[in-house]
Length: 335
Image (cartoon, rainbow, N blue to C red; front, side, top):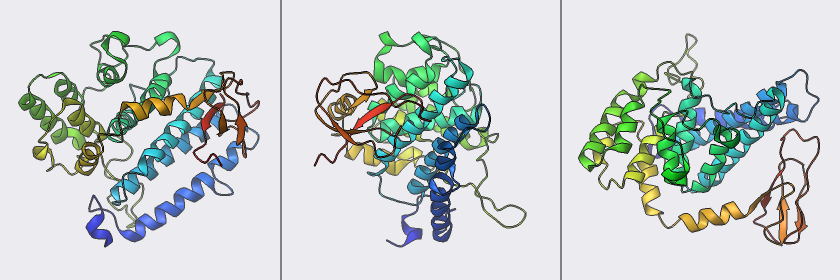
């Protein structure tokens, strides 16, 4: 399909996408890129954590760019897990440096980070990757739930994963504008009122997020260069539509940043549900835990780590890894 016909927002040009994708490859995995520097000796305290955070951010932007450019949605399911894994590495490095396991990976009171967190949560629902939400919660909740109840909108989403009885009651909203209308939508009982609040939310979404670093990034700078634009998307609004069971969301299609294609895809692939999510959770093991299934496993904590384990065998720890905790994942290729 011709590029302009398949792109999901009009600000993208095909050459720009090609250039940015090449830049992502270089920034993340190039000879002087983030991953290469993570393998080198740490120059100062916090440097590796900063690099790891950069990996998560760049991979998230790459996913947004792929969606905005009109790429197929299915492959984004795996890309989302890659992003969550990257932020897990950042979290473990940050906690190592700060010695404070209760510091959240995404700061609720910083609008840029809060916005990213909401977008990632939205993508988990829309891409049917609910299995990733407990992992995001582990980055935010602190030890023994010490940060529980930090934000009411975050809690409203997590209730759909853990159940209300396993989450934290609160009336605190860390980011009122524009997110209060999203909260109202999630807590209204009638479909009419839910849509009314979602319309209000999306009407103000872009304007109220003017303080973020990505706002207006589609506009060229004084030299005529466009930089840092990967798409504007309220994935969390799409997730709300899905969770609320709203069947007719056509009134939201007028908002450029409402991910209507992703909502439609999520509905069409509703069979990718809880059973698959639970299987994904089982096929992941932390170091020292018993291997849940005999076969080949690998960990990003060590290059060329693929090896076979027997069921019940203790998963080993990779010492001195920049990833922090060692997380083993099932290898889809079992030959």
